[in-house]
Image 1 (cartoon, rainbow, N blue to C red):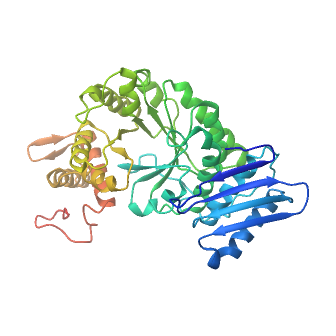
Image 2: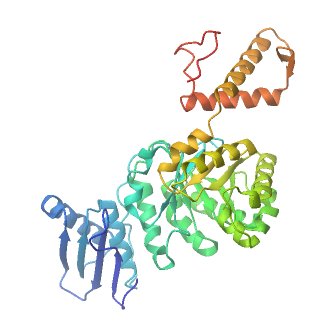
Image 3: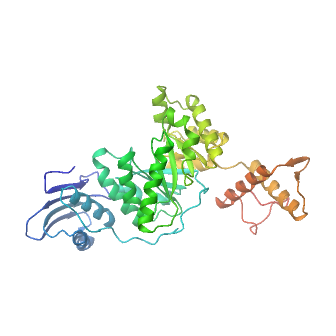
Length: 416
C-alpha cells in the first residue's frame, strides 16, 4: 500500500512472518536519517542491517527520512527490496541504482533451448522465504512469479523482490524463469528483470502471436540498450480456447520460443466445464498443444497438478502426459518434484531399447552402411535421433552410468 503523500510502507509484519520484514518510511525536510529498528536478529546483525539501509538510501539519493523497520530474519537483499518499494510508494522521484551486489552468474552463456524441463516450480514473487532454498529441491526450473500469485497492490514490490532474487539467490542447476504480467505491466516487468539475466520468460494468457512478438521486442530493446547477449527463452502459456486454436502460430512467433504450455484451470473455465482428475475435458487441448509444439520444433509442457496431497494421482497424470508427448509439467509444491521426475523417466525396457538403437547406429556408421537395422527391423533416422536424445537425458539424470562406469552383462550400459 502506498500510504499518504510522503509516506510509504512495504513488506509484512506479525508473529507468523519469517524471512521477511516490514518497512515504513516518511520523507522529511530535514533531520537526516532517523531509523527505528526492531529485529529478531538485532543482537547479531543490527549494525549490519543499519549499514545496509544507509547504503541503500545513499544510492537512492535520500538524505532526510524517518524509517521504521520490523525485521523477522530477512536477508540483506530482501530488506533492500522492501526499503526501495516503500520509498517508491511515497510518490517522490526516486533516482539512483540501489540494486544489491550480484553474485557471479553460474551460466553467463544461458541455457540450451532444448534443455531438460521435466519440472518447473512456481514461487510467488512477493514471498522471499520460498526463493532462498528453492534450488535445493532440485526442480529443472524455478519460476519467480509476478502474475497470478501476486496481489495487484503488490505488483510493484514483487517486481523489485524478483529483480533482487535474480541477482542474489543461488538456484543451483535450476533454470531461472520469470512469469511476467500481461500487456504494459508485463513490459514493466521485463525492464526490471531482463538486465538480471533470467533464462526463460513465461508469457501468460497468450491468445495470438502478436503477444509473443511484443514481449520479444521488449526483450530485444532492453538487451540491445544494455549490450546483453545471453539468450532468453520464451514459454507462452495457453489459457483459453482461442489460445489453443492459435497454438502453432504462437509457437512460431519467435525463434526464442523454446516451449509451449497450457494452464488448465483457466482453459476449463473458459470452456465452462469442470476440471477433473482424469482430464478428459482437456484431452483435445493437450493433444493440440503437443502437435503444435512438435510442428514448431519446441517442447510441449503440461499444466500443473493441483492436488498436492494426491501423489498417486500426480504420478498417473505425469505418466499419461509423457505418453501423450509432453516433456514436463509444472508443480506448485516442492514435494511434487520427485514424483514428476519419476513420471517422466523412461522405463528400463524403453531405455535398453534406446541403447541398442544407438549402438546399432554406431556400428552401421563404422561399417559405412546407409541403413541401420536392429534384429529384423529397419531403423529410421528420426527413431535414432529420439533414442540418442533419450540416452543423453538418462545419462544427465543419472538413470544410466557413464560409459566408463561399468557395463551390463550383455555389454550395454547398466540401467539403474
